[in-house]
Image (tube, rainbow, N blue to C red):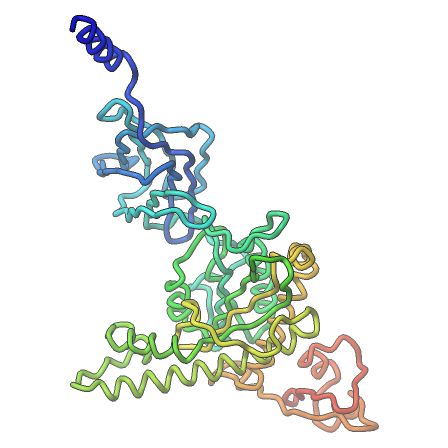
Length: 437
């Protein structure tokens, strides 16, 4: 019996001497500043437990997060913040041994949005902290919403994925989010160089935007078209080629139902007209159905123009626009399309997508397709509508000089309108003839 009590006492003493073992670990901390908020991601070994409070008595303001029974395995001295909102992440004395207290020093008072995310694909357990507020200066080359001008055809360009969401990953480690951002920036530059058009980048840097928020951003700037740029991926390396996707009828019906339930969104879609309150909602349903049908038909037509241009510079995985149930395509206020520029999981196409030359070709093809669509379907009041061109099919014996004289314009104007690099034209070629100078 004495021996038994001796063992018990020994265990008790050991328990007091040994440090408290943490049940969880913070393995990494990542920051993703964007123009509208800063996202802080804590990568955890297990499902996180936490509590938090704010200290707003003095500057810098502080958000304090306690992780019970958790150790920190991150060197915070090497963690550099590029956020205008979040200046520093540091530790403080925890309430209990074996726990971790993290302090976020902030430039402004915020109401954080904190959520626990389970393991998914390449990520493990995560605690995600979203801090609303201006956190990143917009790329100087990208137009802001305030820079946009009336009476220009406005294209919203959405570079897929971003931030902690890399998208598909190529065999040599190329991230989809990086490739498509470069294509999107090149496309925006081409559009902004066109005197009749302007581009707005939904994502102008490496940060994530909620999928449902992307078309809402395009709606808020009253875009005439939304183009979402992606790079496809598959479980095997064989598939390759570009494709274009537009909204499916099934998803359209679902979105119509959601809109009818959300009176504020419905009013936005109907151009500020208040939703009609009646028992069967028939008028609202009719209005939104007409808006949805127009957006879908226009999106399919514009997608065909872009697809025709892409065929000239890359292999196609699908020869016609495909219908899909994708969140980014859910706007009823404008046509939209999702362009898959190729399979990044195919080794050959991964190298192509990494090439600046190929990125420029992809951007040029999308630009020319979009421009072709709006030359044919110009929005009222835009430069394209005011300078609507005639269409001429080249016949035998005709030249640019003959056409310029016939239509009272110039060779240079015809070449500029049709993006011609030379004065050589072919029989059967369709030319857009600008208005007389």
